[in-house]
Length: 101
Ligand SMILES: [Zn+2]
Image (tube, rainbow, N blue to C red; front, top):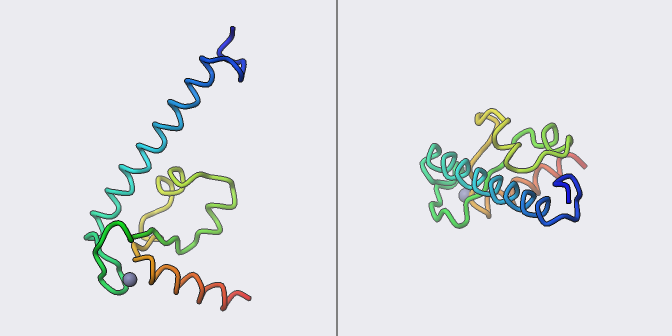
């Protein structure tokens, strides 16, 4: 069976390895970004990393082309990203949505 046959075990293994590698790279990149921003929400200073999220200031330009989170985090200049806690992120996203309606 050829590796190019999508139903072959070899193809499925390769697909899983690629997916796992992308997840690992994304996690590493996220940790690096969080550390670079002192592991704190840039608006309120909250510091529990479980609730810290990455806000994309110009997200529409990057997600439009179907990129995954890893590709987005790798390609976007980090000055276009903010580290926010879940509360600040939700509030900001709501405000942006309200302004753009
Ligand atoms: Zn916050």
